[in-house]
Structure formats: structure tokens, C-alpha cells
Length: 130
Image (cartoon, rainbow, N blue to C red; front, side, top):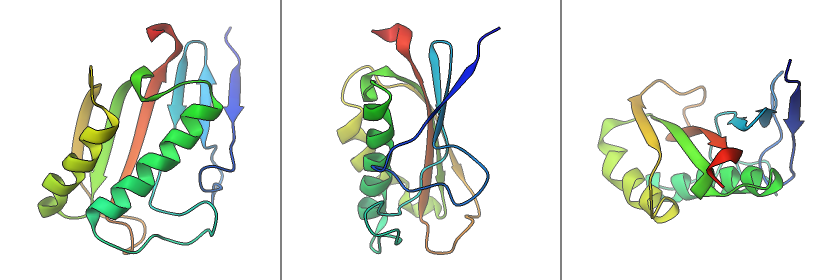
């Protein structure tokens, strides 16, 4: 039986509930949904969808780095948007982080936990892609 390993970094927001930033099981790493909170201040990054998407992806990068992975190792992404009209702006920033061999992705328009969040993203990465 494969044991789970919890991943934590100060380069992403601290969990605000009973969950981990990421969990490794075998060759897979499951990241909790990341929101546009600056880990240095603990505050929501104000701004448009591009600004918030960049913050979310930087939070994801911080977790991936700590786990010894990169965006190249991501195999599945789920993007949650508060507003459908933000899709093009999110996609523009997203493309900067997934420049080659993009992962499978689902994008959903959803009601966010906080009205301040325009986007939330979770990912699954694999150590086997290396």
C-alpha cells in the first residue's frame, strides 16, 4: 500500500481549513485548489483576471518547486472561473506557464468561496513524466 506524503511550502498560501497544499501518493502529486492569495501577505491580490491568474499560477509553481516538479510535469488541470467573460484573459496568462505539451484541462464557471476570487486552479502532476 502506498502511503501519502503531505507537501507544504511557504511559497503558497497556508491552508485555511482542514486540507493540505498538496499530497503525493506514489508517482502522483495532487494540489489543492489555489486562489489569488499572496503567500507573503496572506491577502487576496486585487486586480483583473490576468493579475489573479498569475498569482494563482505562481502559488502552484511554489508547490511544484517544493515537490521537485515543474509545470512540464502537470498532467491534469481544473480551472474554476467566477465569470465566463474572464476565460480569454485567464487563458492568455495560462498559456505562458504551459508553453509546450499542455496538460488535459477542464474549465468550469462556478460560484467561488469568496467574492474576491475570480479564479481557482487545481492540478495533478506526475513524477513519471520525467
